[in-house]
Image (cartoon, rainbow, N blue to C red; front, side):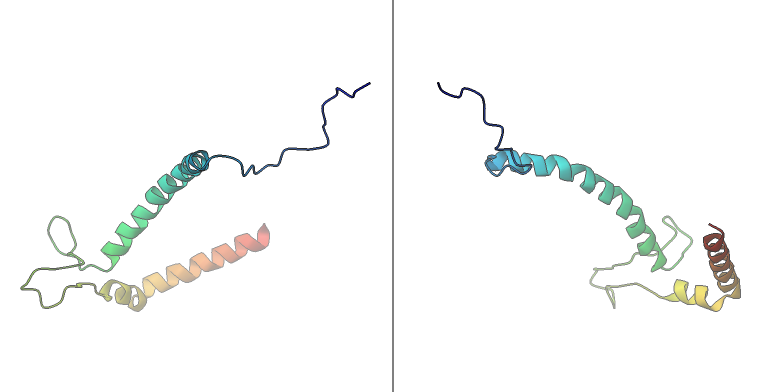
Length: 112
């Protein structure tokens, strides 16, 4: 008499390496696309604000200078300046606000 019951001793693995390359590539694309989308729209505003922070303010549209100038008449091609950050470090209003926010964060941390 033969044993006709299936063999349940062999369990399939979670990562099956027998998938074709195209299926693995498609799976990585489907998983990676939302991450790329979030990364793009999360980092893009930070890059824009970083660019504006190194530019000089002017009365025009847009209200800041270009960060790079590749024209032949330009004496330098990087037009970045640290003046905005220097202004933040010299004005006491920003230091007081920063220290008060650190104090509030510390108190909130201790309470919670």
